[in-house]
Image (cartoon, rainbow, N blue to C red; front, side, top):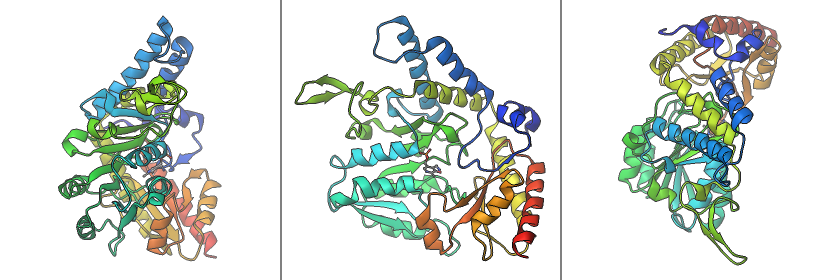
Length: 404
Ligand code: PMP
């Protein structure tokens, strides 16, 4: 490990407030470093004002802080322009805007969209609401026998000429890292607009949207050490320009009469209403904090945590491991034979180990695997080997109790 773990943990106030917890629910949301609280506090204490609208100095300061955060995100993703960063309230909101916005200008009845079996509901249900009722057809990349993204089947499905391919960068249920460079290249060669759900991928590796040549990339601030209530819909200018706004109201217009309105330029056209200004500032601070860290060391540490946990689980009888340690962004999903995942999670909770049980907003994936759900252990850079060992000990006791 190339970083000082105890110094790192000290930057996260949660751990000193709650030393009793082992937090392994990092795929649901991450803890935040002090730098994020400081930035948000400072905004509310000394700059609080609405953005863009008023001519007064405070509003200008708030607007500067808000737009600086947008530029920070744009630079972090290596987007060509800041206006390619659309603030949303999270990945889910981003997908709803995206899918609604594509309907008509890009997608019409009879067009096809390709997703994978591993998608989160946020990349499934918006298609059901906004696209399928208008005649769009959804194709799904199947899983291989070992529950991975089936690249050969993907290439075959591309022959159906989907207009949009929308795939998660990292599976939130299993932790698999998809070969996004190949997926984007093949999908674009087949003429599709390519969307990546980066909700889990953004924290795993630096994304260069231009090098990757992806058309849309979505993520949530709270899964990148930032606050809840803020997210990003990145899109190439030419595609964002096509999107119909899902939300109408203040800020997104140029002119309004009682009978019609004309829309503002990007990015404001897709950002109706007062945004979550403090959260945008907080996300900017999270990214600046992250840029001072050694991301490669974080990756290596998480990989080592997963490997150690996985190896330990293999020694515990009756556990079914659904995800392995290779090409894994930090998630081990497992089940105890014949037991409901919630029972195991409850016993761990009683020992202050936070994990998640269920189908993790990926119900179709579990149906495809013919598994009722899983217990998900998701690791972050701030977890320790000691926590892995204590969790393995608690898991062994819980398994013994449940299999008595
Ligand atoms: N996609 C993936 C892969 C996710 O893990 C999540 C969050 N669990 C989402 C989308 C939705 O993110 P949010 O709930 O922050 O909108």
